[in-house]
Length: 174
Ligand code: FES
Image 1 (cartoon, helix red, strand yellow):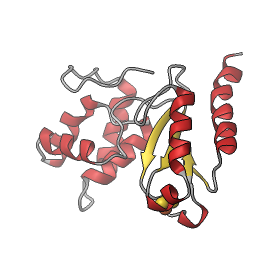
Image 2 (cartoon, protein in one colour; image 1 turned 90 degrees about the horizontal axis):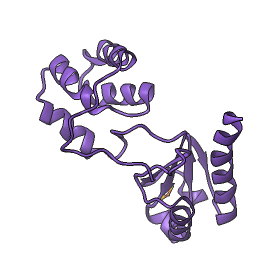
Image 3 (cartoon, helix red, strand yellow; image 1 turned 90 degrees about the vertical axis):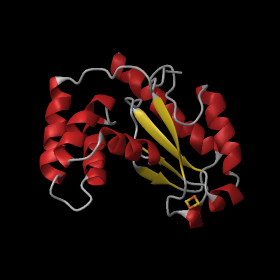
Image 4 (cartoon, protein in one colour; image 1 turned 180 degrees about the vertical axis):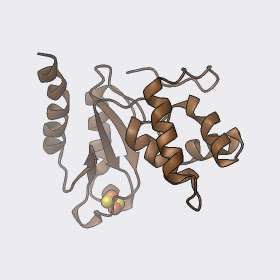
């Protein structure tokens, strides 16, 4: 398992590329109504996560307190404050998927990767996240792999997904 962010730690300084991404997100969203959410989504789209050090410049640009920005980031499960693995697997844990046995998948994926929800596997291949309804209830249990929806997921299918995620990185390193 890769380490998770320590909320009390000093944020890692922003890189030049991260600063540029923040400036782009601010410029694109600052005049929108309720600018904070679209801005954070745009930033996460660009960087894969919302670096904690981005909070002060975002708060300043939107005229909010840093506590306001921090509160929104931590309230919504969608936002990450650490870099994700090479692949992001989001498993639905809502009612329809539970009725179709997603608990077995939950246990299986955690056992196989040696992590729990919200963590990234030690090899950096997979970040595992929980979601609560993907709008695919008729084909539950459902998951998202790097934004691609999959339905009627069995243990075997989940294994194939994980095999692909893990082996992608090994191929790339050769
Ligand atoms: S409950 Fe899982 S997709 Fe709706």
